[in-house]
Amino acid sequence: MNAPTRTNVLQTYQLLLYRRALHPELFQLKGRRSISHGNFDFEAWIMPGRHVLRFQIGSACACELVTDQNSGLPTEGAVTNFLCAGERDFEYTFDSSGIHYLTSAQTETLPDNLYDATYRDTIELAVETEGLIHRWTDSDGGKCLSMLDIQRYGGEINAQTYHLIASGGVVIRTQTLFRGRNRS
Image (cartoon, rainbow, N blue to C red; front, side, top):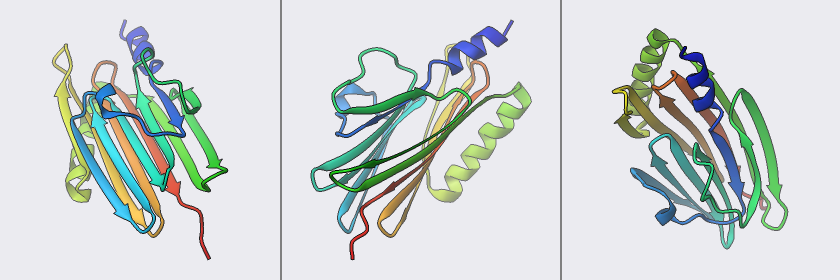
C-alpha cells in the first residue's frame, strides 16, 4: 500500500537549470552559503526538500533548482528541466560566458531501516564537511532532511546535495559541477 505513495512523491521532483538568477522571495529559505573566489560568485540556498545553486561570473549566471513544486516556477531563462526519478546526467556549456555545468541526479526509495541509517549517515557527513543542513518533520512525524556539501577547487564549485523525504523513504542526490571558462 506504500508503493503508490513512494512513486508519487518521487515523481514530483525535478531539476531545472536557468541562465539567470532566481529571487529568494520565491522560496522559504532555511539557510544559505556564499563563496566568492577569483572571478566567480556562488550561492547555495537550502529549503525543506529543495535547493538552489547559483554560479555567476560577471553578468553571466547558471542557476540550478531542485524542487517538488510543479507550479509557480519561473520560466524565463530556463535552459532545461527534467524529472529526477531514476538516474539522470546532464551537461551544458553557456556559450556566451563559457560557464560549464555538469550534473548527475539519482533517486531511490529505501525501506525504513535503510532510510534511518542513511539519515544518520547524512547528518554525520554534514558535521564532517560543515555542510549546510536543514531538518524537519513531515506531517506523519517522519524525520526529513536536506543537506548541501559544497567544495571549491580553483575556478570551480562541486556541490553534492541530499534530500531525504521520510514519506516513502525517498532519497534524492545530486552531484553538480560549475566551472568557469579557462583563461590563459
